[in-house]
Amino acid sequence: MKFIKLATAAHVNGVLRHPHEGVLHVTDEEAKRVIENDAALDVTDDFSDLQDAQAPAESITTDADRGAPSRRAAKPAADTAKE
Image 1 (cartoon, rainbow, N blue to C red):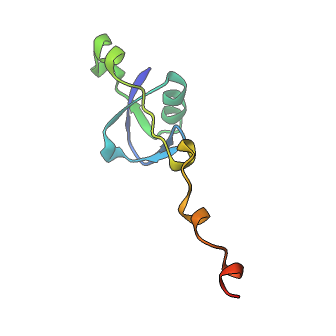
Image 2 (cartoon, one colour):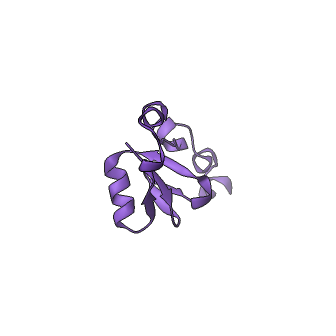
Image 3 (cartoon, helix red, strand yellow):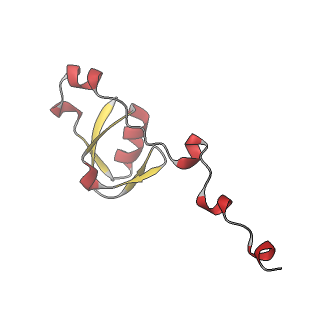
């Protein structure tokens, strides 16, 4: 796991993230991808091994991931609403 600090807005684990969100704890593969795209800096050396072990991996869940109904699905189709 690596700690990264975004230099610009970037997709991290499939979600658009922004620099003001602070340091993110991500997998080595995700860190490598974002860093190679010049979107982040590796700040892992600023953290101890204990902090690395205790920090949860970055995981944002979207409504689609949770299986929640989307707002669009709840609305009736335009052609059926006008009869």
